[in-house]
Image (cartoon, rainbow, N blue to C red):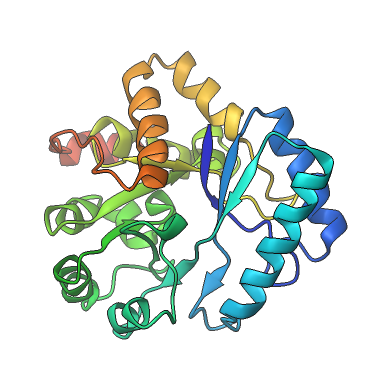
Length: 255
């Protein structure tokens, strides 16, 4: 299984602080039968500096450790790119990284909502040959309030990722219900842990899958895990036709 969202490289952002923490995260990932992790330190975030050479050094150091220990897992390069009008140019010039060198870009929106300039940036990315994947869409306040906002972004060519912990309930019932509603409306395509540490932001990779299994969402499990693999292969993703979300159904979620 491939994890498409992880802050596992040491000393780059609010994820692992030290190599020892990275090693413990790798041990946990192997125990969860994760065979590949796309590392996605924050990029263009107001609180963190983007340093691609440092990222590449840390990625090599960690993969060297994996090889020395003969661990059955591989790390790949990537970034969680904060929404910025400069992103298409940054990707073209090597100032930003796609997921595992593919056409797919992990795009982080401000948590407070969906800015008005999101669609033009998505259109520019698509025109330039990239496919943006909206990170942890279910945790965006604007999408929580009106999930049609995510559907609009998808109609312009974006895809969307859900966080394992959101499905497992670690961010609360409201976000869990949002995640399930987006899944049932065919608005989610990719699955990731968004792991930061083992204490407050763990993988919960299997816990999320187990919850979906319990709720008989077998098809979406297969689709998301297959789409995760397709990122590494740089292949087009399996996308289902988006479904409408009735207002009455949406408001009943919070009753």
